[in-house]
Length: 392
Image 1: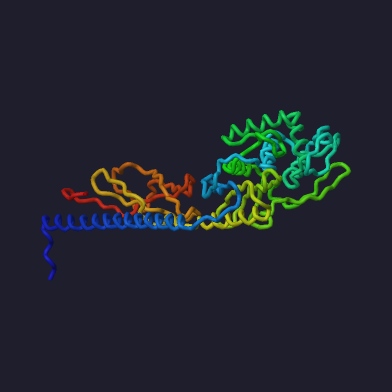
Image 2: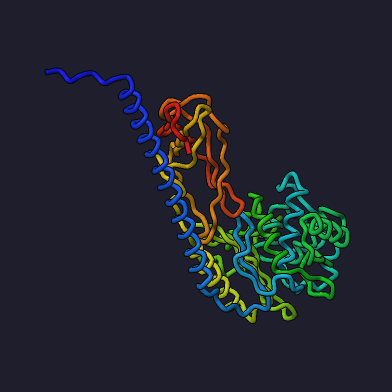
C-alpha cells in the first residue's frame, strides 16, 4: 500500500524544519570554531605566563640585550641604553660603510703613512705604501680585528680617518642609533667614543642583511694576503666555537672590558646578543651561550590552522550564512608567548550560496609583526533559512 502523499502545507513545514536543522548545524559548527579559538587564546595566554616565569640567566656584563634577529623584538635586556665604550665592536660600522661604498672588493687600497706613525696596538702587519685589496683588508678588520686595516680602509673610503668618522656618525643617525657616537674607526677607547647594547644590536641586525658581511663575520680563521705577505689570523670571537653561531664581532681593552655582538641560531630562530663590559672573554662566552639557550627556548613550531578549520562566516543576501574554511594547513615557528592575529580578505556578503569548496578569499596570519603565511579560504557548509525562518 503506497503512503499517502504529503499535503502542500506539510511539505512546506518539513522543508522549513529541514532548513532550520541545517542552519542549526552551521551555527553549532561556528560556535565550536569560536570555542576552539578561545581555547587557543587561553593556551597562548598560558604559554606567555609560563615563559615569563622562566627566569633569564644572570649576566655579568654591565649592560646587555638579546633580540629576535628577524623582527627586532627585545627578548631580554639589562640597562640597554647605557653608554659605554664599544672597543672593537666599532669595526662593525667600519666594515658596513666600506661594503656599502666599495663596488669592487678586489680593488686595492694603499696603506697610509699614519699606520707607521701611530702606535695602533693589534695589527696584521701592514706598512705605509704597501697595497692590499679591500677584501683582504676587511678580513683582517673583522677576523683579526686589525687596527692597521681599519685605518687603511678609512683612508680608502674617505681620504682620512676623521673624514671617515663623519660618515660613521652620519650612518649612526640614519639608523636611529641615539646612544652612539664615534671618534675613530678602530674602537680606540677615548672620551666621547661610545655606544649602547641596544644600538649595537640594531646595528648588528642591519649589517647581517649584507651577504658579504655575513661571510666575513662567520669565519674563525683566514690567511691575509698582500704582496710579499701571507699572515694566518684567528678570530677572538669564542662564540664561533659553536656550529650554530655565525658572528658577529668581539672586542676588548683594559678600559672597556670584554664586549661582544653575537649572532646565531641554536634552536628554531636566529637571535642577536650584545654584552658590554664583561670581566673576561671566558665570561663573555658563557653569558652569550646562556642567553642564546634561554632565548631559543622561547620559540616553538606551532600549528596555526588546520585544513577544514572554520575561520569566518559570510552572510548571504537572502539570509543565512556560509561557513568559510581553511583550504590548506599552516604551521610556523613563533614565540611561545606570541599572540597570532589575522587579516581577512573576504567579501562582505554574497548574493547567493556558493558551490562547496569554491575559493572565497584568504587569511594572513601574523605574530610579533611578522607574516607567518597566507591560507586560501573556501566555502564550507551553507545554511539558507526558508522564507519566514529566522537567520539569527
